[in-house]
Length: 106
Image (cartoon, rainbow, N blue to C red):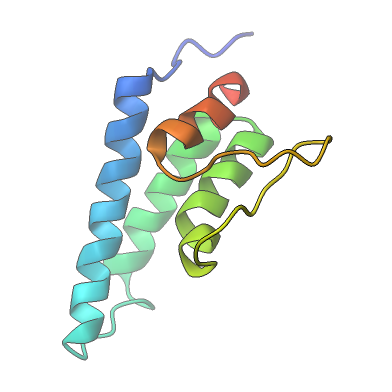
């Protein structure tokens, strides 16, 4: 049975931007020496976001989203992913991420 909850690009952008904003708030708390990473204030929204992405995307799509949000920001400038022919795959913004995950929707 096909999932009837297919996310649009517009809603995908909102979802990712909202989660990034949440992460920015967490970073601001941390700069104020308030560490809520191990608290429900952090864990619950992260688990909710994870559950939403797993409902809407297959495993590859979720992996790309996680890579974009959690790993890529710490890698610095440059190309980090390549296709089978060793051509760089752009992943600099949410539009690039959408191009990678749109075919991974359930």
